[in-house]
Image (cartoon, rainbow, N blue to C red; front, side):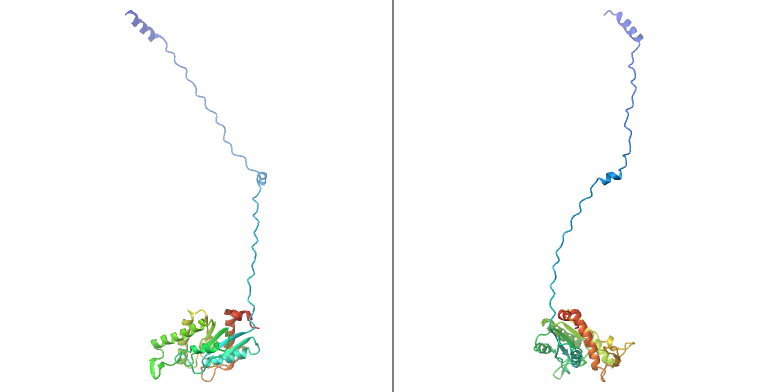
Length: 283
């Protein structure tokens, strides 16, 4: 190209209109309107079948065999003179009911302060099978332990408490070894204040020993042998609810109706806790 032509072309291009691409209008995109879903009609619910009920499974009931009632029960009555009085009370209570028998195994003038008395249990069982034992003892135990003429433990001392507790515990153990459920009748209130204090001491030892031996149940007599103020009384209600003389002249032992009153409580205790007596009932 000739040199003079280039400037002419540049000038012509500067004068030519520039073609601008037309602007493209943005067209909005139409979105579908949001609609709430129609409510579900009751008829639509009705079309849904409920889940099928699971049929109950019948559990067979297996009857528990019930032991037949025994034709007779036998109670060995142990202890000292108070125990012997209990034998008489129980015997008189049940004399017309031949289903009950009572072995007279208590002995007068005995106690744990003098002997362990284990032979008393063996002697009672020598008469034949026994279903339970009843014992009342302690009237002669307000004394020290002696070996021959020598004192081994003074009454109420720590040594005495230990020795007496050991003998009571050994006696209870022998009863449990012989499979003898036992009702141990606790001592009553005494007319003499010191004697009452000693009776309570002996009761505490017995209750403590029985707490670890499930075969021995203690039976308190204190509540039924005091008056409304909690003091000793010689007169209180018998088994029929009649107030009468119930204590012996010595303020320790009982009149026959009192032994029967306590005996009734003994039998109720046996019927509540010992199977042969539960099955036999009161008749």
